[in-house]
Image (tube, rainbow, N blue to C red; front, side, top):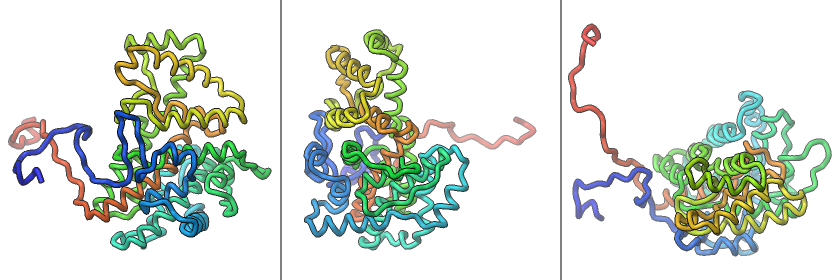
Length: 393
């Protein structure tokens, strides 16, 4: 322990960029080499062969489930999708009709703690897993209810005969006639959720661990994580990519835009990453999944701009030398928009996918009996001074 070797010494590290705040066995991220593994399994293999619920089980339990475990897990998640009717009616009705879906999600995740007071028994591992089941199961219901409230549409109840991704898509888009889920959409949704399921000690995961270290209930901790994700520097990046592509406007404007970025007059969104100094492995997978979606929907008019922008950036020494490669946000927004999701739902989709990762880190942190988070600060204010009477100020 360096604290014993160097008593009284501490470090000033804004953004905690070079400070490890946790030991974790959940996700390995090697940004220099573009490697992402959940519990040792490469993200490429999981995206190709697995499902979101299987990955959720892996993150929370440390191992892939056998058939019996998988069947039990899927059944348990599937039969916890409903919200208490009083919660559904009262909570959503208390918000303005056009409230942002992410604001609704943050509030209602926290609100669940009042319906599940047993969630405060965090010393019981079985109880913690019960809350994890509830949260993973109810996130699509919370998310779609928030969306439909924001556009004035009636709620759609879960259909427990459907798989996780299909049920979510149906609750989002069914209006009047039964909604038939296209297999390409279902698979794209599975892949996107898997790719977002965990990403080591990012801002929202760190928030979940910090808030959880106070031993609050998981709903409050997960709501705090949602709040961290709500910020445009974290969960809103894919929306910023689409806004950038809208601003470029046409294929012919890509080269002038690139020159504007190099001159410092434009900002390139969806390239580069706080951790990755190589091509984000998730971006490669999403790029492949996009083609299946576009085969159904037709090409998103922004796709040609995005492909040209990627080609131009990856062949320019300015971006290569700065290791600015496409990240997961560069293509995900294009897929979401092509599937019919409004841009204000993008961060909500991110939160659904990230929930099992947040929960796995929260559970791991409690197993480790981690100390309550309490960083130091470098004080830069006034030195000691005496109080001045109001008449003398």
